[in-house]
Length: 101
Image 1 (spheres, rainbow, N blue to C red):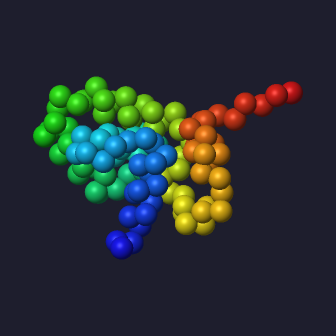
Image 2 (cartoon, one colour):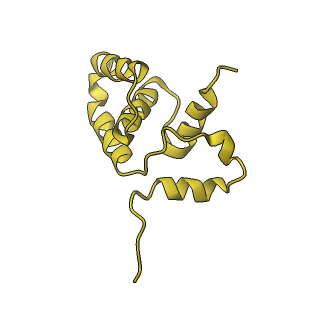
């Protein structure tokens, strides 16, 4: 096992991004939109855009999707294994919690 790769796999499950090359790049755009920023992510975004510019619309859509989700990129998912995954996924995908007065 590569340390922290389990989070990468969970990110696929939460975001619905596939595992083919262009989907991997789209997930990096989503994570960038969600607030994650590191050298690996930036390299993937730049190289992915240069190598596969025909997917730019998909990448921009993924970035916006990440902006509209609660920030989750820094969570320790191992500590959340006891949680219901569907509830956790729903919580992350709702940026704002509706307040009823």
